[in-house]
Image (cartoon, rainbow, N blue to C red; front, side, top):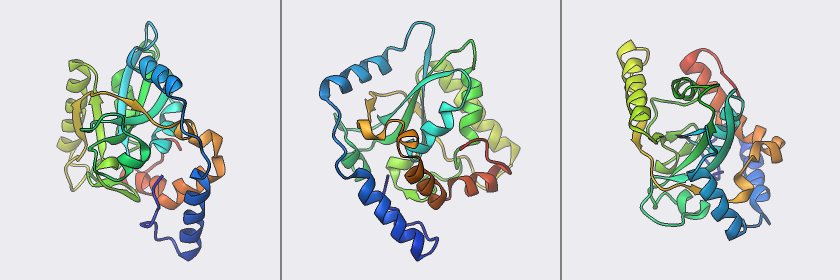
Length: 225
């Protein structure tokens, strides 16, 4: 995802992380533009009876893995939202200059899982008090953010955030941004289902980035990985 320079788990993991980053992206083709356009259209118009939710919690490989395990989630697409430029790519977004965040767009069946339940899952799989990035990935492109698709989603997100702050569980306020949903651009094909396509590389990345260790510090348990 990033070059992982910030992962200080010893020289062996640093070297391994560099090899993973170099080998993982080499030779991966960019998605066909027609396919990408159809994917974007499908994301903007979910199937009948389904609703959309969009969450940013750092690396979208990890966010996708976490939400794919939730009953009632029908499909997920990794992508970019919240920036000031059109047609963002991984290269441009990862530079931190476009304003976009890596996000996951979730199509879910509200008869099986409510938006509030998705929010509860989000809070407990995110470093919600770190607004400068997530885990080893730093910068605004990895900021924690909830993009609300309806006024009700925004109300629920704001209510949930306030409830956590009011609980005084943490010594810092919740740093998650809550914003209205903006144009969504699906990420390149090789990012979709990355944890399934490249399970070993994904596992090394997730462990090296310290995601689950930090979640356990915050909540006392790891909900899923």
